[in-house]
Image (tube, rainbow, N blue to C red):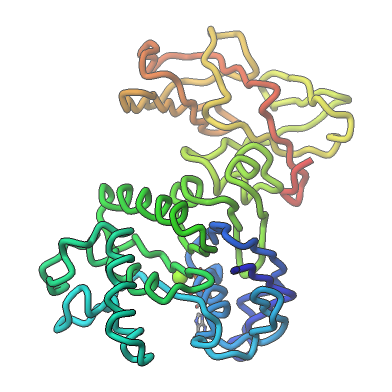
Length: 350
Ligand SMILES: Nc1ncnc2c1ncn2[C@@H]1O[C@H](COP(=O)(O)OP(=O)(O)O)[C@@H](O)[C@H]1O
Ligand SMILES: [Mg+2]
């Protein structure tokens, strides 16, 4: 079992508070991603769960047991870092079994556990090699193997793929998803990359300045962001946000068109959010607003059109790669009225 509960957790470095009262329940076997911009407190929170960083206030529970004041070795959690820190003079097998050896386990047990982990990680043919004879991706797998052999209640990953090149990152992302399916063990995974978060997570925790902005499945965060921060952090290219005002049950875009608010409570909306894939290009004079296509990026399957809409700013529109070239043209933009997000002056969704 590996259920983790954070209760009013705070971290202060001197008189600077970097974790500001986090409440979060992680279910046994769940793959949870902490995502947020650099410096928001992801690593600190993960290290607090690992026991590598003291918790200033609040409680951390592992399977309902209070582990807040326990040292890392008593928490049964394994941490995998961004830098693999393998012993260069030991073989892959010896690196993977090192923690078990220092814990005084028998040779037979170590051999068996290392072999099991090597099978899961497809490292069976590499057990006798030294780390320098491996690729970056293989080294990262050895680092994960070192964590697996300890059969922890949970794995803690801190940006484990950020040292790898883009292609290898995609491969390793797949490996980690498969590993999670195979082991069915709780994993907490920290990244600043929202694509990594979206593709891997059962649930994503979006952090900003030491606070949780929203917790939800990738789909919940994409379809129903609670606030402007999450709306613009999740999704690539970013959600378009334009100023708007309201008149009765209608939204009004200054110097442009109007449309239905769709909900009578949305009276105080001051900003309208719409994702690039929820805008369609229509003939000039039609749709909710108009603009000039300044730049079109062709990516094969998709076009990203960057459209200057005057007082509304530059809007990004995603269109099929098979659609017409429109760079330089004046076009109308139609917003899918079922996919609009309205925000109040504080940036809270309405
Ligand atoms: N040992 C420390 N002493 C003082 N401040 C720290 C220490 N470790 C981290 N911080 C600060 O805490 C904040 C969160 O850092 P960190 O958890 O590393 O962010 P992230 O992993 O999200 O990039 C940052 O402002 C960082 O400067
Ligand atoms: Mg970090």
